Image (cartoon, rainbow, N blue to C red):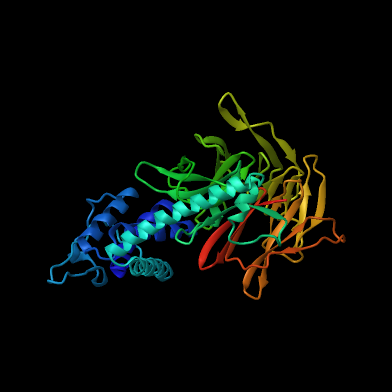
Length: 484
């Protein structure tokens, strides 16, 4: 059934997705997620009729009318399947135009994801066993929760002087003592993979983001979870939908969603949506920026950068502010604008960018972060910084060079509680990949490099937080830690 879903209906679903998003990595992720969502709804014991029904619903959510059909006599041989009694299976929900073939790499990725889900379902079925076994399991779980509650109450009453942070730390299944950070939360994601590329942190919240496509409009769905102890990403404290739409296109032109970014700016979750009209591999030539309070609420559109003649845009966020820079093209010549840095201001319920400060630089900044000290970046397109080096551009325009993790090429910057700036980077270990951190310092001075001895499978950084994925005791955890 998984092969039928991918091979028979995959081309139509892939076509619908790339019509919305272009052939991007985000489109590939959305396609695989869509296939998995259909599979979870039908179950592996379903039939083709039910499969067809749910595929039609998925296509309808992408704006493809379910009444649109392709006659089976016009289909290619590999698009036709027959039931056990030989009756031809009707195609439904497919666009009338010729569909692009499903790329082999995406097909294999979708099948691997479905096979992993099937393996998990089979393992769960074996674990739960019969109905009686499931009932006994439920009773044992209730009894276990009661005992855990009693033990927690006893510990709380017998150790009333213990701080809340100490109690939360006692729940941590793993250690971060090797890094200059304090773990604030650990999430069990064994059954719930998380996209580390779309996380933001602030105000005691972890905010996740996901792209949503539908006939009523596209949007970025945000969900917030408390940074407290050990938990799951199952009951968000708040949710918010950031509606997105492409810029108005001139005749004969069209805009494609190139990428979107979720990051923090102090007490705000910031969504940056990058559009391109230069082909999907072209640079972003327009960016829409939205802000949502870390406490929850309606999104506000902060700014729209770009427009006629803009060839590329860079947007960076950080401590309560946003920085941006643009490249304008005219008459075959490119001109790089100064960097503009502005705070996010809220007054009488209205959210907007405050007065901006302009900083002149040569070239377009690379890997930029907004900090209390200014804009920290890895140089510019005109003057790239060496590996492991960072440039801090103060609001006055003064530039200072700092050293970070030696020879690091994939580093990120986080700002600690004390105001210290750290570089976080990956490093190889005997067990795979791990993390290292070093405080930014003057070149030539010596600073210790802190190393996490436990291997990590993925990691990220945002604002003052580091997040990484570890495995312990056969389970997978997302660790969220605040830099010191």
